[in-house]
Length: 230
Image (cartoon, rainbow, N blue to C red; front, side, top):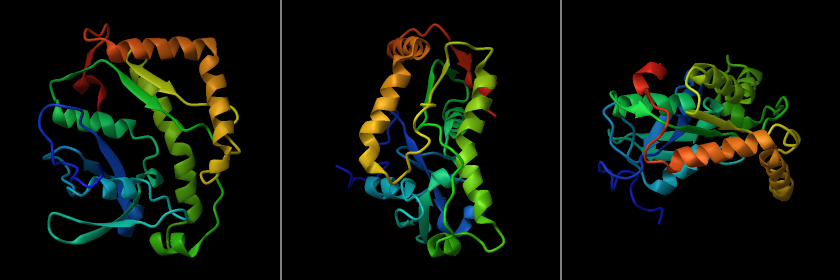
C-alpha cells in the first residue's frame, strides 16, 4: 500500500497532496521541502516511496530518526519533521495552489490544529545538538515551533476576513496544554477535550458550514487565488 512512488499516478485527476520535511543538514535555513504526489516545475523535490515521505514528515527530533531519500541528482539527503519550521502549512498550501492553478479560485480552506499548547521546554539532547548549528540556540528553534501554528492561523484569519465562508480553522483551546507529543496513553483524554470543543454551539455551526462547503459542487463563496496568496 505504501510502497509505490509518491508520483506513480500523478495525472491531472484526483486529489493532489504534499507533506513538509526539512533537510537535516540545513535546519537553520528553515525552508521546507514539499514531498508531493504530483509533478511540479516549482521547487522540484524527490519522487520517493510513500512510506519514506511519511517517515520524513513525522521524524520529530528526540522521538524518531530522520530518513535518507535520494534526490533526482542521485545524492542522498537526510530529512526530518517539517514541523520544526512549518507546524501550520496553510501558507505553503496557498503557494502550491497558486503555482498549480494561477488563474484558479478558492472556495474552501480547512485548517485543523492539534490543540493549543503551553510554552514548550526540551532538553538539549545530543540528537538535537548534532542537527542544529552551534551558533543557533535550541530555545529559539523550540520557541518557533511553539508559536508558528497560531501566528499563521491569526494571519490567515485576518487575510480571509473580507471573504467570509472560505477559511475555517479548528483548534482545541482547552485541556490539551498538558498532553505531550509522546503521551499516547492520553488519547482518550484528548478525544474528550476535542468532543467538548466541537459541542460548543459556535464550533458546531462552523463544522456544519465547512461540511456543506466541502460537499458543494457550487460553492457560495469563491475568490481568485492570486488575491490571497503571497
